Image 1: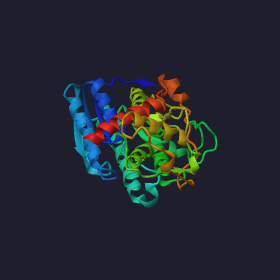
Image 2: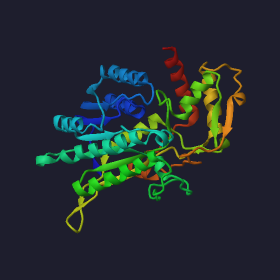
Image 3: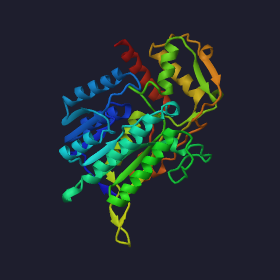
Image 4: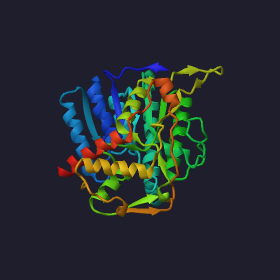
Amino acid sequence: MEKLELNNKRILLTGAAGFIGAHLALRLLRDCDRSVIVGVDDMNAYYDPALKEYRLGLIREAQKTSGSRFEFVKGSIADKALMTHLGETYAFDIVVNLAAQAGVRYSIDHPDVYIESNLIGFFNILELCRHSYDGGKPGVQHLVYASSSSVYGGNQKVPFAVEDPVDHPVSLYAATKKSNELMAHAYAKLYNVPATGLRFFTVYGPAGRPDMFYYSAAEKLCRGETIRIFNYGSCKRDFTYVDDVVEGVIRVMRGAPEKKTGADGLPVPPYAVYNIGGGRPENLMDFVSVLVEALMRADVLPADFDLESHLEPVPMQPGDVPVTFADSAALERDFGFCPQTGIREGLGAFAEWYRDYRKN
């Protein structure tokens, strides 16, 4: 593994106004010195763009006291001319691709946007990295990109390890993420691009995505509506707090797969994949109970709130799986880190943020 310094670097961060992207940008501005972070986001309306603007506001405020600089570019990674221009202009040292069309259920009815962003867009990222070496230039030292626990599909073996087969996706979203891993491996082999994929497990926390269960459940409960509990409450999810995910991404950014030459004289692909998950699957009903307790403590819900009357048990829905469970042993072995934040602490932080965000 090649150790990289994050100071005095040119970093491309796509999906910079998104949930994980914005938290990562804030962390980079806090920790890095003399770096230039170029954030790209198309600010689409998959969910309320006002939340994305809010996150950008936090980033701009953080930049005032940072030793590094953040530059925002509104645009899509599917725009090849834009990505080529950015690559030629900045000569990036590190690329972190978090831009993607997310959501398992949305992919069932809107497949075209997943092809555009997750396949064409990711291809443009890979081409940017490939051509960064043109003319003998040093080029991109590390490409880090978001994959997903969805690639494990209906895997019956738990916990999910990166060595497990991931050949049977149950949603188009999962298929595009598996495709990203295959494409990155091909570019690592053909063009010696150091690439690391990160399989995220149900990320949650403050300033999160409103389409995620915990956020949408909070919204509905505050409006007095019922929430659907899929698989009649028998689902389990390995929820991962956003600060833990960012810590994992930062550590991986600093450790690029080493470039080596094989016996055939050709590159051994500098390629790796890691899970980032807590390794503690939570029953969905327990998760909802902790969420409601946190919302009551934050005075978002009344102290006498009756949860039972706001639940609607329903069957499993298409594209879902009954359990996700991360084996993060490889991440701990190579980077000395495993997510530790429990749901009481994490949902408590979300509830307090949600209270303040609603007021404003």
